Amino acid sequence: MDLKRTVGLYIFKIVNFLLFHTLRIKTYGEENLKKFKSENKGFIVTFWHGEQYILTQYLRGYGLNLITSLSADGELQTRYLTGLGYKCIRGSSSKGGTKALRDMLKVAGSGNYEPFAIAVDGPRGPMMVPKEGAFFLSFKSKMPVIPTRIKYSKAYVFNKAWDKYHLPYPFSKVEIFFGDPLTFDNNFDFDKIKPDFIKVMDEIGDKRG
Image (tube, helix red, strand yellow):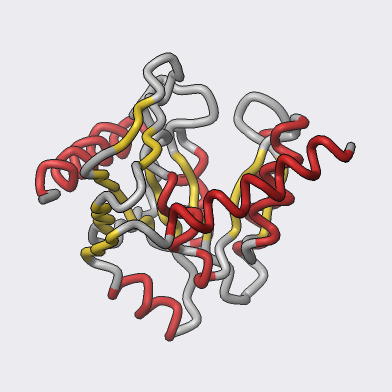
């Protein structure tokens, strides 16, 4: 990585650290994550692109596995996230997806505590339309899915971005809502899971204060 990118990444880390520590964060349902961790059981935090800013800093203590792209930007993202204590698997649904899924299944089947966090409508949308990968991983690994929504009281919205990314303003209030764990039976049917999951995510969104 060249010097310009290295310096840029360093500045990015500092700015994000400072911003995070100004935010007033309230969580709902986090006891599910804490319970699974205490029992050494994996889980899959699932969320929408655009809402995820706070999760990067807030969930760093859970030892999560994340998916990062194979692009140059993905390399920067991987370095940043690894520095926060995350474990990154390179690939996406548009490039390297098959290998990434194999790697995820291998990690999930290791017998160790290996939770995941996955933006289920990525990497390029459509916005709030889930893809199959996280649910197939849950089905094969028997790890529950934790549907997650985030609300920012004040945020800058990148309206030109496909995911309408939200960047909270300093000192704003942030609510993180972790829903009840979801599991899937032996008859995996994503066509049925998809609308049911969207409904759950909408209901969580409606409950947010």
